[in-house]
Length: 118
Image (cartoon, rainbow, N blue to C red):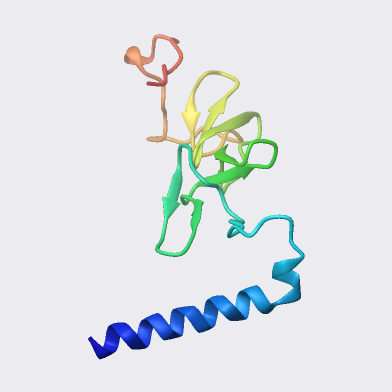
């Protein structure tokens, strides 16, 4: 019971400190401002904040984590998933600069059909 009283007093003193702060009182809203993404796909959460999951970046216009990040440059292709490039010839590779053995991503037995995303 004493611990509950102690934490209640501590919470109220912190709250009073925030309200007494001129920057807090003069702000247009008194809600906690989150600097990261609030929701959507590819959002990871910790106890204190939301952030884009590894391999994803936030699109500034929307605030959504929908931009895939490829560590290696895609070259003649574009990044479609984290560290996965869609090359001009339809292959999915870690980079489109050179063909890599064992890193081919063509589906349907290599018949030229592009990979369909789920």
